[in-house]
Image (cartoon, rainbow, N blue to C red; front, side, top):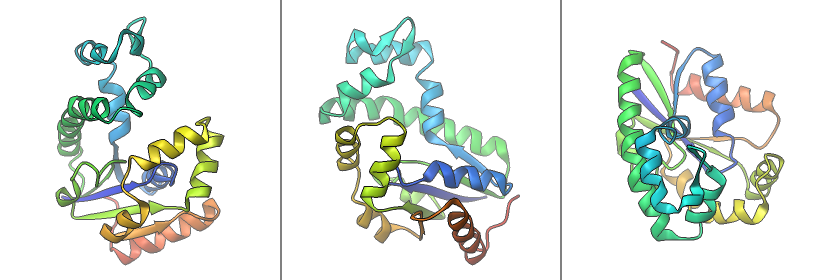
Length: 193
């Protein structure tokens, strides 16, 4: 099985690329989706209460409250990552094995920050300039100050680009992104299955 990591800075378009890969018949796992599922489990919710009673309301995680709590506090963010990341990695492994696909893409936003690059046969970084990423995040309702703070917690885009096996530029239209993705898949000799 060939494992391909898919990552990039916040707002770069990783999820769009993941959707395009699925549409082309590739197996794609989403670490963020798995994290969302896991944070709905009673055991995990109970542990998340250590971040304050406001982060769990009516038996559900209040993601915005948790974000406000951890993104300004490096120690709290490290505790959250220590709580969630091992569970996400274990679930990724379980789902990857269940797929039995020849090639599996794993969308992992904090791939480099978590030191996971050595787990993959190759890593594709999706990238776009910061102003363009901020505009995308604003359209999704994330205030610029919050987007900048989250971006600052990640490795700089230039560092990710330097570490990547391949970089997929997401600076134009969806049609241009699709063409760039298809060219990259051809260059890497990747086919669904």
